[in-house]
Image (cartoon, rainbow, N blue to C red; front, side):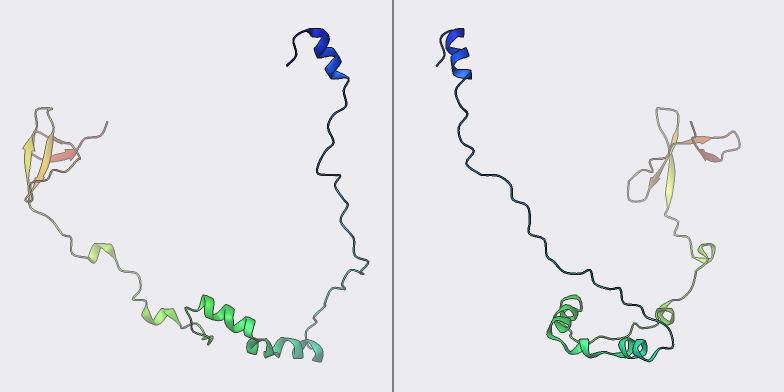
Amino acid sequence: MIRSLHEADASRHTMAPLWPFGKKKQPHMLDEPEPQPIMYRRNEEASEEVLTDNTHRESADYKAAVSLFGNGDTTVKRAEEQSQFYEGIVDSSSLPVATEEFKWVHHTDGYHYKQFASGTFDSVAHQKSTEGTYTPYQS
């Protein structure tokens, strides 16, 4: 413990402890030439051979990856045509509208609310016009 400024000044001149971790070393660089890009051109015999080669499908790594992403099945199947299962766009106006029975309830706040047969209320407030029609309240 330092008791005076003189002791604090004296302690500043002492040497710092040794760093236990050492210096960072530069990573070793490999003396390899950069790989040349592979160029594929249409209508070349070598390109056709590479593109039609499917021997990679027999490797264990490929089968393991297919099994992982194919839910355990190791065979690859062509995607099915999904349009055969599609019924097309259905016009929403042609669908039967499910209208639930309700009655209008006048609340003390001056607005009218729909009370359904189940006893629940619609959260939208309505205003009653002089003709007896109800319109949703808009602020």
